Structures are given as C-alpha cells and as structure tokens.
Image (tube, rainbow, N blue to C red; front, top):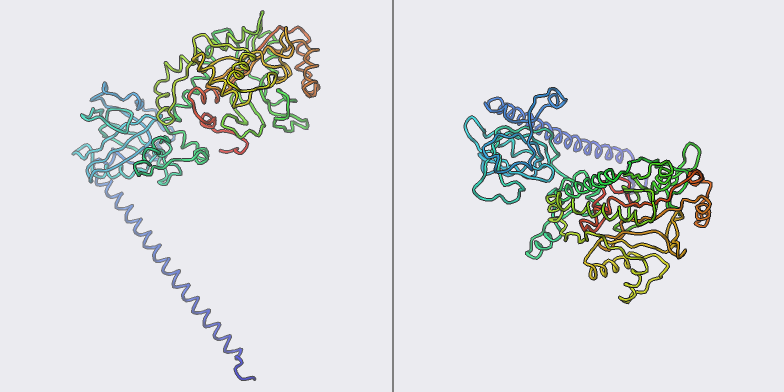
Length: 544
C-alpha cells in the first residue's frame, strides 16, 4: 500500500461516526422542537382553561361571548327587533336598542373601559363598555377588546348623547353596551384594511405634505378582494346609486306604457356586426354571446308589444384596455314604435334621464356625500329640456375651436371630450344629445336620413364629454335590411329569423341602449368604470 493512502475500513468507520453524530444532533433538535410544541400546547390549554374558569366565575358571563353554531342554525324565532345603525340619533336617547354590525375599530382605556366602533352599510356608531357592578365586568371589557376587526357582533345597550361631538363616526350618539355577542369572527390579519381602502387620494397627499405616510389600496388589490372593498362607505354609496338608476329606469318606463322583456344571451350570429363576439359551441352548432338584445327587442316590437325595455347582461369581446370599457356590462335597452319621427325616442331619453338625475340628487344625498368624500366631484350640470345638436353642428363647433374632424367619420374619445367642454362653455350643460350621425359609422339596422343618405336617423347622448347612449330609428323593410347587413359583412343566414320577422308587417320603430355602469361612473364623475362594476370583467380579469 502506498504511503499516505487511506484505509477503506477507517474511512467507512469515520463516515458512520459522522452519520451517527448528525443523527444525534437531528434527534436532539427534533426533541427540542417537540418539547417547545408541548409547552406551547400546555400553555394554550392552560390559557383556555383560565379563560373558561374566568367565564365560569364571572356572574355576567351570559351577557357576552361567541354565539355557538347551534344557535345560528335558524334555531328559533324570538321576535327580537334590530335597529339599523343609520337610524340611531338623539331622538332615541335613553332607549334600549339592539344593533348588529362589523367591528370597525376598537380600543381600550385601561382595564375598565373599551370603545368599539360598529359599522353597518357604511354608517358607524361608537359603542362604550364601562365596568359597572351588575352591568359590565372586566372580563366583558377584555372580551370586547379582543374582537378582531370586521367581526360581526350583536350589541344591546342604551343610547346616550355625549356632550362633545364624536369625530370619526357617522352617528352622533353612543351606545352604552349591556350585552355583546360575536356572531362571526374575522381572521386577525385582513388582506385589506377597510380604513385604508376608504381613504381619498387627497387625504393621502395632504398627509404626505405633513410628513405622515397613510396607506392606500391599489385597484388590483381592491378587485382581488372585492367583497372587502365594497364595505367602504363610498362603495356602499356607489352601488346604492346603481340600484336606484336601475329602479328609476324601470319605473319611469313602466309608467310610460313599456313592457319589460327578457331576451336570450345565447344567439346564432352577431347582433351588432363585427368580430368582437365571444364565440362558443352550442350543442354542435356555432354560437356566440349576445352583444346586445337589439335583434330580439325589435322582434318584440314586431310581436305587437309596442314599447319594450330590458335590463340585462351584454357581452363585448373587444380588447379595450380603457377606463370606460368592459367585456361584460349591464345594458339598459329600450325599443318602441315610432308614429311619425325618431324624435319620439329622443323625447323619452330626455324625460327619462332628466327625471333620473333629479331623483338621484333629491333622494340619494347621503350616498352622494359618501362617494364625494373619497372621490370628490361636482354635481352634474343638466338642463330641464335636454340640448339637441346635429352631428354637423357638433363638427362645426369643433372646427371653430381649431379642431379638424372628418365630417363623415366618428368622434374619438378626445374629440368627444373637447366637444363636451365646448358645449358646457356655450350652453352650461354636461348632458346633451348629438343626432344625425354619418351612416358609415352606424350599425347595419340604422335608418338613413330621408334628405341625405350619407347621414342617419341616429343619435348619441353624452355626460361630461363621454358617450353613454347610442340609439336610432331602425330599418324595418326586410329587403333593405338584407342589403344593409350584406354591405356590413354579416352572414345573412345567421340572422335570417330576425329579418324574416319584418316580412309580416313591421311598424316603424327605434330605440337605444345604455350601459348602467357607465351612467353611474359619469354621473358621479368617477375616473374608471371598474369602480361601478361589482365584479368587473375586462380583457384581463375573470375573477373573482
């Protein structure tokens, strides 16, 4: 054997020894971990036992605690009456109330006092727990202080009016807590802090000037956790306004003799023309999602419904990454017989939206104020009788302002805004109608003007310089309709049932469509349509 060479048996022995040493270390490490875990479990068990013991010895233990699952399974009807937080005011001073809300914030003052701010539908009230014999115990104060934010609780107590105005809550009364029960506990670490999500950009910027850093929440995070984001006062206001818009739309049209209809969203061909459709297979046949209820609401007019409307989903497969486009939105659609002139449709638009704006301003002041605190805006300017301009008049206003626009082309976003600014300056309104659009930029079913086939009996309606409504008189002559569809590159076979519906006597008719989300966005001067869509669907978002 050469000098300096290793003995294999010695090397093996050394390796085994090292392995044993490592195994011992690993075993020792695991033993330490196990011992640590055991102690933690013992401590947790002891703490739980102590807490249970404390509850057992607390004579007031029945006045607070977590409600067991058994009692939440529709166990009994007790007849209890809950008061909404928004109705708590000075007139209820001294009254006993039962309220339910989320824990918005909590803080303690020593061991004998705790303050909880409860939130319900964007409204908040301060609840006070003060240790008092036979009323509130220290254990009860401790329980209340330990409740995590966003937990849902029931509070029974007496309404009081503090001598000093309360800052940070919507209601200027307090509730002196006598009983408190946790209905649903939230996890301690929330992905979104509601206070952060409710801050305005202005508030964050003002604090920054003073050297204070306030957290905000970016849009993607908001949308990822939309069910948390919607808990802010502004979002509660936005979707209350949206609900009212739909309600006003429906009630106004019902009062005008319209019938609400519900049309299919699975169709054989494109309803608007073009390629921006979501295609799918329907039982072995090619199909797509409806871009609008256009074809079917016209067929309803042929079915002698005379005046119809629909509120329903609309699908557009456009790759539009803008502040005002969605791939799915809620359409508010109208169709009606025309006796003499398509201005009859414009008259409905005029009265409908003026009525809507007036009603929102009158009945939704609290909601508009909540929105304005986070997203400051000026009230919409509109006239009692809506301004109407022809497309040519709009083009002339732009030209006089030094903006060259194709007289037979469409307006782009920038020229729409510029025209809106010019209209505001000249007529003092942010809501107006532009009609007689060039035929080349309208759908195949649009009726041309009698005196100039280059223009059409169509219109768009604008709020704050952005288009919200598109409408027109429709072509109701089947031969003419077929020619128009072919000229627009539409396979006539896919809309044959639509065209055939006009072969058996069809009255002159027209209508319009408007996006619900866009109406709310522009009425409240919000900068992105995703703020007014509960769970928005755009080219990049399919969840939640």
